[in-house]
Amino acid sequence: MITSADLRRWQYAAINVLTTITDDAPPDLSPIDWRVATTARLQGEAPSGTHTERLTAITEWADHLGIELTARPGGDGEVTYHGRTERTAKNGKSVTVSLYLRSWPDES
Image (tube, rainbow, N blue to C red; front, side, top):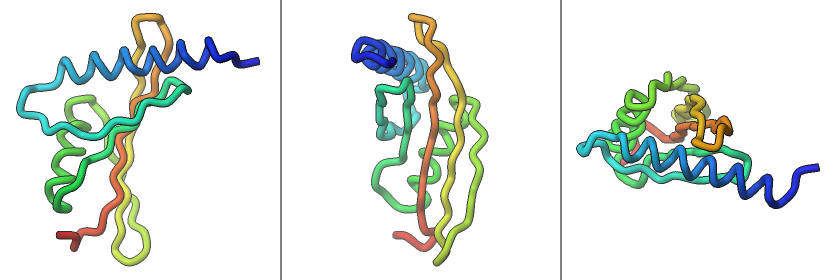
């Protein structure tokens, strides 16, 4: 049985990893939006901006984290970019770090 204490510990692990990867980021790396889950997961998404700006931000973070992004074309010209890696928090918990971007190339 998963307890509230487990969920808090896993969320703490994700916060610890987020702190580490943002502290290690080069100063010119664009900030992105992060979601912290109670399941020891982080998901980074590019904030608002043009298609090019958002793709650049997520690609630079992928390079920083050593994540290979996969592009999956969808309907109406939509492309979804996704990739993930694992990091270990200081409490020893493995944390999944994923990057995600859904965009349309002709977005302005």
